[in-house]
Image (cartoon, rainbow, N blue to C red; front, side, top):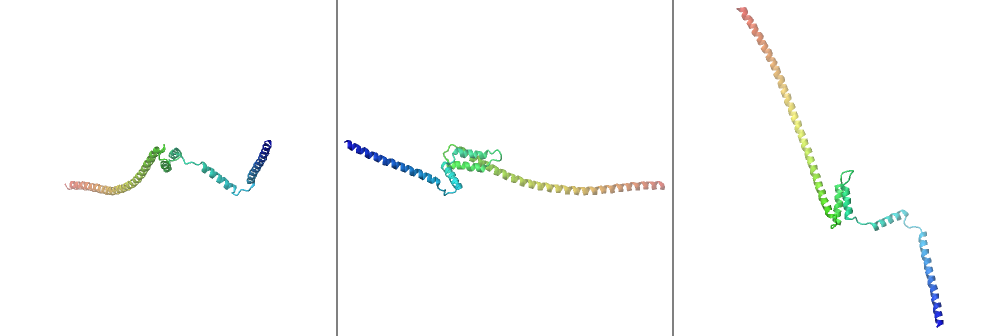
Length: 195
């Protein structure tokens, strides 16, 4: 029995040595492969490799914007402090929110804002049309005023000419009256002389 135990122990120890040897050999191959991979030249140029890495990492962690993100982005287009609000971009973001998140928390508010933006667009269009009409009416009135001014000027010229003619007639009448007075005086003098 002792011999069979010793034989089994010797056999196991030899097998253990072979397993340990295989493990060490496998570990050496793995280390050699890793070191060999580091030592080889890259097939992809470094700039492209960096760009691909960023693109891959970006795609891995890229998520679609939430309904809140889209709503806040739309509000940022509406509350632009430096310049006028960009209603078109805000509306695009809100429509995307409604399309991609139909049951989202911010969807009703987005719908209301879309309606407000639509009303603002209609009012702006109406204002533009009213402004064009006002400019057209202003042009017509300016032409009418100019026509009236021309009419007044012609009337003034006509009355001025008539006034000058009447003044000349008046002067002639004054002269005639004076001549008549002079004649009357002369007639009186003759009558006195003839008496």
